[in-house]
Amino acid sequence: MRLPIFIATAVALATASIPACAADPDAPAYENGTVWDFTEIKTADGHFDDYMQWLSTQWKTQEEALQKAGVIKSYKVLLVTDPREGEGDVMLAIEYPNMAVFDHSVAEQYALQKKIFGSLAQASQQQAARGAIRTIKADFMMREAILK
Image (cartoon, rainbow, N blue to C red; front, top):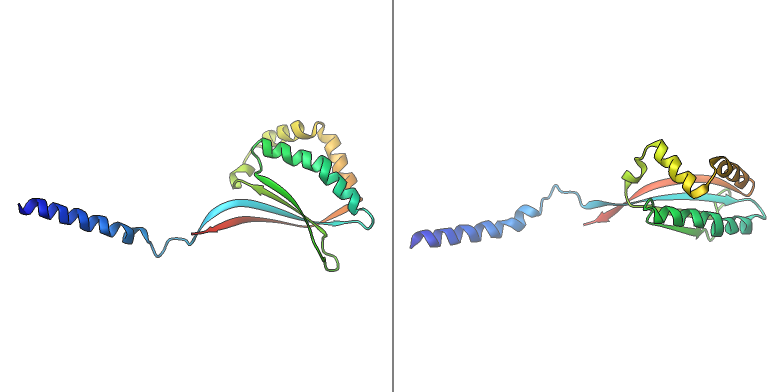
């Protein structure tokens, strides 16, 4: 008779101690989330609409292709309401699922770029041409911290 009571008591005590063990005081208070890349853009005087036109066509097509390929999760264009002297007026935000998305061979990266852009030489020329209408001021890569 004592053995079943002893077993039941031991099981109850072991089960009751599980939450105490799970609440590790040394455990991190956050978990890794998605990776964000923010690019600060300063459009050249008189070329804001030109740059927005490019974003709404070629850039958007590129981002949607990357999203379809699973390389990115989302993308946004943010407008700075009151930039200070020398600061950008447009912020491009791209959300990546994780850091592993950047760990592909150069050959794989070039194959994807060729699929999206066609000729890499043409893509390079277009990149250089955009220099006349905008300047990249800064680029920030950040990982979201999901608080527990």
